[in-house]
Amino acid sequence: MAYLTADAKKQFDRWSRRYDRDLLQVFFFRPAHRMLLSHLTGADQRILDLGCGTGMFAAAVLEHFPQTLVWGMDLSDGMLRQSQERCAAALGRLHLVQGDSMRLPFRDDAFDVITCAHSFHHYPVQERVVAEMHRVLRPGGKLLIIDGDRDGLWGRLLFDVLVVAVEGPVRHLSGEAFRNLYLQSGFEHISQQRRSGPLPFLLTSGLATKPARTSSTRRAA
Image (tube, rainbow, N blue to C red; front, side, top):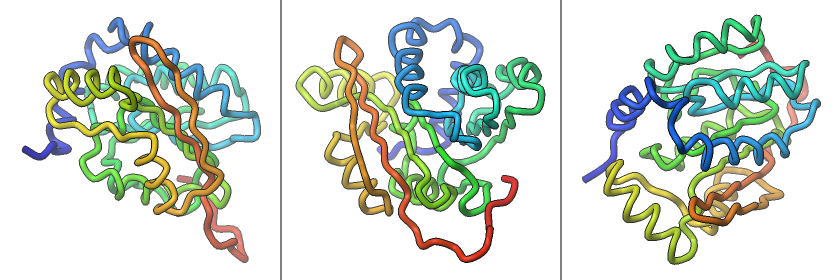
């Protein structure tokens, strides 16, 4: 049975009311957020957080980098409703957008960085999502995706068996599959970082390669 975008939306709408209180925040999501933050700098002025949930990571970025603007995008209107308080507290630096990751509603070359933490396995056509990420990144822009690390026996049991039993036929990629996907989509300088333990995850980073433009095309997203 194929996993559909509508399936992901239903799951996250149901989860949204207790999302911030879930134990996964402590043991899985916040460690991933700390790893992502370590790969950002003050020069990253425009960041798109794809699958932003209730805006917890976006709020952390804004706290660490006072000059940065963040666009948080999620398919789930339930998650976005729960993020409204954080959005108001950001005083115009956080912009929330409801949308489908396979059709990003942004102009070409709009962002310096795209982050995506623990939602990529929910995307039914992952190749198309990464192609869209590449399109909206500026030349040399960074793509940072964190997802469960299914390399190794425990990872395969956890993510290919247990998570699939709970969430349906989602697809966690191996480290090699992530590298190949980045390469095929036009990224270079690809690197990976792992967090081991009972809930392992993998960060894959790369820089967008694209022809330099002769005139400025970066406009407001």
